[in-house]
Image 1 (spheres, rainbow, N blue to C red):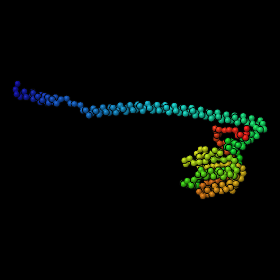
Image 2 (tube, one colour; image 1 turned 45 degrees about the horizontal axis):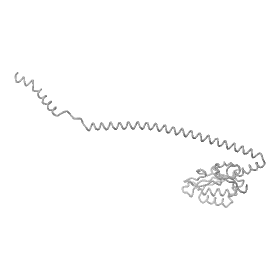
Image 3 (cartoon, one colour; image 1 turned 180 degrees about the vertical axis):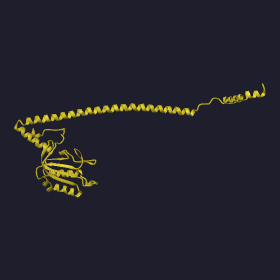
Length: 262
């Protein structure tokens, strides 16, 4: 073979062979370890997220079931309480009816009924209707300080003044007053059996001319002086007929028979 023909046939093949030999001597490329670690971390994170989502979904279902069970129990207990309250009210009406029938059967019983009615008015155990006065008390216009607002002691003075001029029954915002009723502050509200909010409506039953007797009395004059000094709003009107509700029943915990009645 001629020299020119040999060079033409083998020069390019040998060059390629040398290049291939050098590349093979370097060895196969190693995988990127940092990339694999990142993929592993992402996989673990995805697994944790999926697990948390599944657990949250299960907890939400359990919480909803528990909530629904509690709502059902509360509704059932509320229905029981309402039914028992209705039963108590029905029994009270039955007892009152039987007592009235028994007492009306004799002169002594009718006298006892009259006495019970009087005691019911005085103790607040019975609703009462009659003439009297209605007083509306409120804070001074634009009041910002305590001295320009109605205080518990202000209502106490007003109530005591009404008792002093012959009131037989008094209620504040519909709450009947008894010998066990307290007019006091609790936080920022005046409490008379429950929290009240102004204006305070004081209703008193005690016959005609109560308003005039109130103004002329020493306690009434002292109240009016306090009202004028601190700018409290006050309006008293005479009413031909007022109806005051009975006070909440008081549970008797201890009682004994007086010695002189034995």
